[in-house]
Length: 188
Image (cartoon, rainbow, N blue to C red; front, top):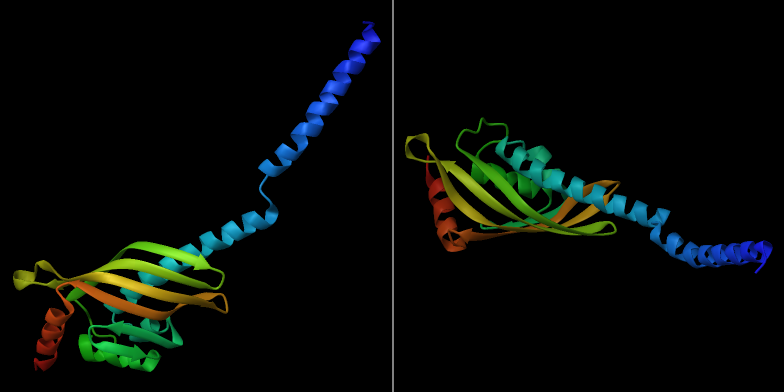
């Protein structure tokens, strides 16, 4: 084989390898649209986590207006005290159960954990755990209520809001908790 023929074979081989490798390399590169979609999902997940954190913070801070603002205008909150639909009804329920808005709260706090969030476009579902801690005898913290939140959320004008929240008490049972709430409300 002459040197020129050897070079020609080498060039042809390199071209064949390059033509074979190009489609593989192109497939390995993420598409710009795929990256943007992944980024949107991550941003949505973080924003929804913030809603869950703000929920507990506003509740414990007795900021019922901002708390209710985490729900859509017709949002629904179902819990041991019933179904509360719309921001005014949610605020009223909180005042009945926890006392007036803005009151200093040294009696209890909420922990929200283990969020599992699934986003589909402008809607999402979230499941999380909650623990309600109250001041016990002598001031020690006492876990009083534990359960699961199941949320339906929607993005409106770029903001994630709770459309529906269902609180399912695990410990104590819903019946035991209803008895406790009734006793709390009957206190002077």
